[in-house]
Image (cartoon, rainbow, N blue to C red; front, top):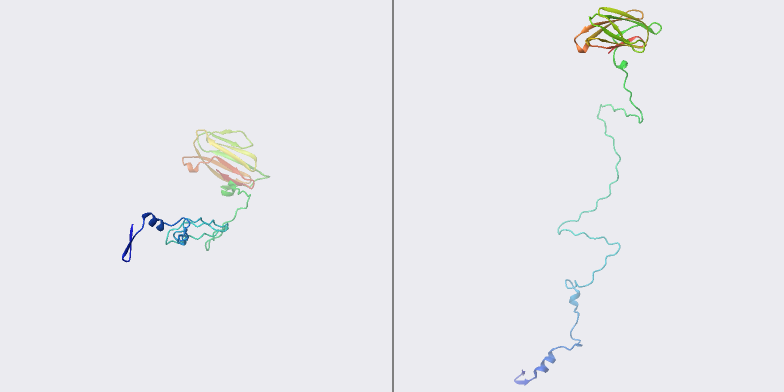
Length: 214
């Protein structure tokens, strides 16, 4: 290949020309690893640094947002009883293990009459004003008996407290009327009625002489 230098031309063989251009394998003029590859962003081929034991993992976040801060642990709070309203009396607290007993019937019902027992005993006179047969019984003292219509019977020396039941043979309704006429004597008049609210079937004489009708 001819080479022109100044005004003269020289002929240099092609083989010698390429041997001068190509670097030799051990030539110190070329840097096999330039320092630019150690700078960002050309240093991606370097080995990653392992995190230390005290390094926390970093969660990915969206650009422009602030990562949430961890919430502190909430301590268990004791249950606070509600504050009663002004002027409202507090409700009584039930005692553990206690059972509330319902009041007895005689504590709820007002007596219909009162008779004075003699030596703890009373007499009861039944007067049947209906035309039907009435069955009666003194609980714990007599068997069931019958009382014909328009008749009466006296039950003597009944120990108080005592209960007396009665019913009509034809299953009609009865309305008892009570009257304590004398010491230790209770008169019971049994009349017919068609009002279900007036129908009664039991009379009980308490130990103190109070008479309850049910």
